[in-house]
Amino acid sequence: MRCDTIWTNAHLVTMAGKGPDADALGRIENGMIAARDGVIVYAGPAAAAPALEADATVDCQGRWITPGLIDAHTHLVFAGNRSDEWEARLAGATYQDIARAGGGIMATVRATRGASVDDLVRAALPRLDALLAQGVTCVEIKSGYGLTLEAERAMLLAARQLGQVRPVRIVTTFLGAHALPPEWAGNADGYIAQLADDWLPTLAAEGLVDAVDAFCEGIAFSPAQVDRLFRAARALGRPVRLHAEQLSNLGGAALAASHGALCADHLEHLDADGIAAMARAGTVAMLLPGAFYFMRETIKPPISALRAAGVPMAIATDCNPGTSPLTALLLAMNMGATLFGLTVDECLAGATVHAARALGLAGTLGQLVPGQRADLAIWNIARPADLVHGMGAAPLHARIWSGK
Image (tube, rainbow, N blue to C red; front, side, top):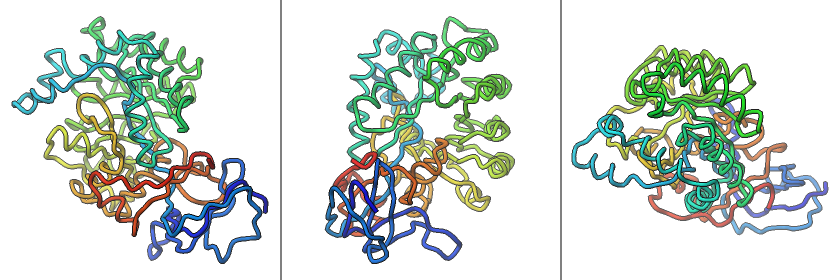
């Protein structure tokens, strides 16, 4: 078999374990990976590998290899700074207090509207580079800080450009329904109609929208308004995902599941009906422990109930300027374990195979199996648990994107 590169003398975390008694991580000691044209053609025990001829052979010297990590929920593109709001929260202000006073999302909207596409790219690059240094090979990036057609377009264009200037896969999400802009005050229904009938079709036709998101919350948009937008998204063939049950329970997760949503995100106030709906629909639970930590929340997502229902759980940074200024996916995994009670296996799956599913990329990313993209992270670790255990650790040895 001809291939471009072989990685030998490695231990693999394939994330392809199956069955109740199997190793969920799909560990393979003394393994080998071979790739051709950016795609894995072999991943398994070195002793069982077929005859291979490669242009390059990399001796991993006993290191561990995982799939490239996937940050499946970020607001990476924005302008401005909201550390003042963090200080206000330290002094006792709530997220809702700040939002109603014109801060929160709208503070970032004002800064982002004044930024060019180039400005947004320059501002986002250090954040993206921090994620890449942690073995991330795929990043989801939302709009939602523009809230005009022109500013939302600029955010999505900036996200696309990030994927051109760095070796990383970027998935874009249109989040025009993030907050009600001041020029639409008192007319949320009209704003949603504008999104559904004009902005979304326009941006989708320009190739800028991979998925559609919304914020279903008392300070944002109602379930009926989200339903209106999601029906438009599905008519355009775009999958949906939802910020749901973060601050209260409006039944957003069940609504998202009714639309076959890829994921429902946050979920601190998720109830049994929402869990059942997600399980039936195959909707991923996107856990965002960085926001939980940063906002000093006390109500945790119902992890045990999600686990019992078989709902796959993903983990992401939720990198954003106001409630989770986090650019360390490994730390988010540690938080998932220490704050939410996830196991090591669940944390690793949450940043690989389940994160891929939450982006509609199952079968393409998230596992070390033939046919998937050769996106790899090679680690200086003694065992996979070290990736979740370390706080502030930097164990990445090499990051491989599309076989290079």
